[in-house]
Length: 383
Image (cartoon, rainbow, N blue to C red; front, top):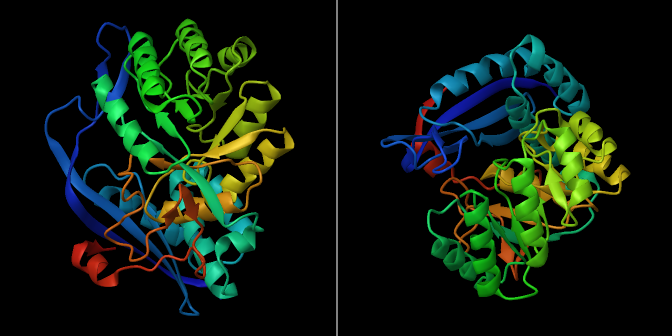
């Protein structure tokens, strides 16, 4: 069996995306991205990727990060995919992983791009074996406790209101993406703890905006409030300060979500004592294959690998990967409606949530049942 064709559908989603822009945090000498920072909107498009074999089996993935018109992204990916994948056995996933990893240097193939291909390759493998992907990976469980993450809201009350919805929905935790500066973040964290009560699992992720002294200040407050972990408090490359922070604080420090070195970077981070929890991601790490490498490196150091979340196809991919990990406690539902956390207009069978747990899809491959009529209706162009 060989890959004979790669197709990318440019798909129009509902609504418009607010534009992103760097802006200065009020009262602070630093900048960050924020979708609220710039007036105007961008087209809300995505790419749906199909790897088609000469045996008639297809593997599917989607592209999570396509801000604005999708065509420029798709053209870049398509050239790389056709050059590296067509004519290759799709079951040779480790060979393809290594091939694409080194193509990052010579073919400008960004790790995100190889991740899209890798997820589709695992989909093909499961369909060939007539098994769910997590069974091929070595199943550990078929239900995963889930928590929900907030957006970065301008008002404290919005964090509380969303958190109450999360708790009422039966989820196992709530993570704050509050990046309003250390003073306001502590106020938010305190208000949310008071509203949701003692014993409910809470985490905090300021998305790398603190200095070391600010991270210590917030971390100490979170320890008093009994938060489970402090995530991405400092820039990911700052291994020295992350190490110092791990040594200073009692609250676990989660890091490594946004560095494109995959398992190699995680090994360096952990060998330096610069993280208490590893963050993994099937996009940044190089697909399901790369994410499992990250999880296994973390396991060798006796560390949890808590997985970031994307969607919609990556919701399936992450469910299968986490279901094959012994060292991941939660499934993250990031910035979703707690009442319909995995809904997608393109997917007829969204990943099920029951009693605050993700139910791992049991269909062949990723187990995605596409709504082909809706996909075709929304397809602007096929490349």
